[in-house]
Amino acid sequence: MSAVISMATRETRRDDLSVTERAEMRGLLDTYFEGVTEAQFARDLDEKDWVLRVFAEGRLVGFSTLAIEVVILSDGREVNVVYSGDTIMAPEAWGSPVLARGWIRLVRRACAERGERPGYWLLLSSGFRTYRFLPVFWRDFWPRAGAAISEAGRALRDELAGRRFGAAYDAAAGVVRFAVPQRLRERLAEVPTGRDRDAQVAFFLTANPGYSAGDELVCLTELSDDNLTAAGRRVVREAGA
Image 1 (spheres, one colour):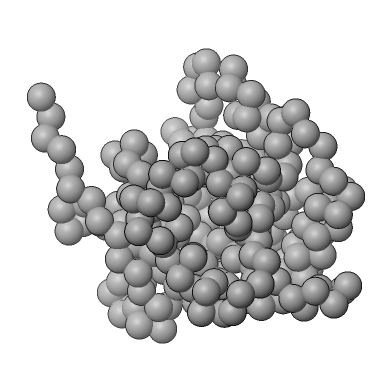
Image 2: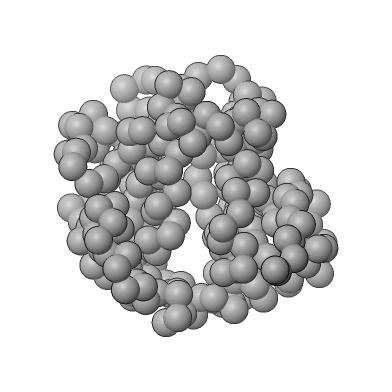
């Protein structure tokens, strides 16, 4: 019987990362993505507020970067928006809920610091594993299998993505195409036999046919308790958030 690996998360403000910690994160990302340049990694990181790192027995096995902003929309509404940046989990850590727990705990606390207002998560996904995070924890999100995006949802997605990514955002396709994309390395980009029978995975492959070239599907969900699935509510309880 294999030993259970102990994993834990660590929240760090981006400004508090050391040079060594930044290099360690870039090294992990480069292990699983092609096209990771020092300049692009630094630019993405420097646009974020927080880094959530995952450690297994003291060794870095994953991280996610995020920014949280108060956005005044074109219709005058104020909303909290969470933007996810570089995110990776080593295959050995895929079965653990530790990233989800830590992410939800950090996001709920950081959004509360910004003030009480509606919250949304704008997620870029170039792989089906990242996309699968949405149906596991959220009831309503876009785009998804079996439900067309509402007119209001599309307008909100397009406004937020357009502001954030400018000309790199293709509103008609619902994807972001960076000039220098980061692409999952072949062993991770491949869809295991049978996984495409999952409705959400099959939808992702249809909605983002250029994922292997680094195209990022723009996804949007409301960060409200009412929008959590049963699994999402359980993670919130376990996180003590």
